[in-house]
Length: 281
Image 1 (tube, rainbow, N blue to C red):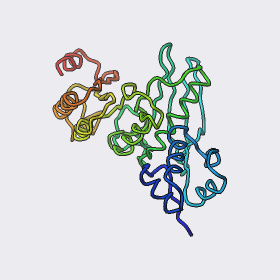
Image 2 (cartoon, rainbow, N blue to C red; image 1 turned 30 degrees about the vertical axis):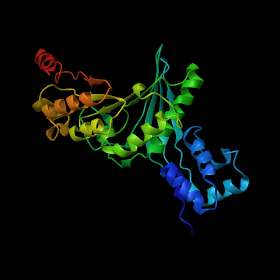
Image 3 (cartoon, rainbow, N blue to C red; image 1 turned 90 degrees about the horizontal axis):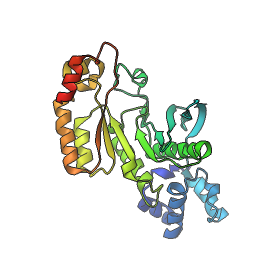
């Protein structure tokens, strides 16, 4: 039996090669690529400028594995929280956060998380797997549809602040951002995207070396290593000095902004001592 390929794991060049092996011209692959990443097709039958025979051939040799809304909750302030179901029945979360002048999608990068930050609910979930680039892309498409339906406008911003650590799913996150920002994709501005990390110093430097065009946010939450070790175990291998060095390297090579996230935890990181340490960083 022919093993079907997830068509959205293929680059344009790989898709051209696959279609050529099936006797199809390169322009057909380009049409399909546009349906996948610009028009966000979730079914081969949506590709109406392809012949029925070609669409049947695609169904025979390839798979499309879109994510789907499983449960949606709407708040009085307009926030929409969604549980999205993946093809293997795992669930992830995505959120639409509308304000007067923005519509922000908060997306996930992993099923669960391995970092065990004490203040984060996802940190208590087992990391099941990384999301594919297509699964990340699909969240943006679905949340954008929610924005259009609920507030009458498209997304203005995307933040990678959902489930998982984006820099531990580096290749898929970067590939998804490429599809989201490319002219032949969703054509959204990289300046409107922020990737939030708990702090993986070597991967922050890799972002710089790869000339990342988006913004970076560090989930700091404590201004000294002893305290940060307690609430964020990742700090034991990525201490504050190492993170500062990595962020300075990032800023020296990239145009994206760097911001710090700091959740006030009662009796943990909210003292005058903590504020002085924070200012001193």
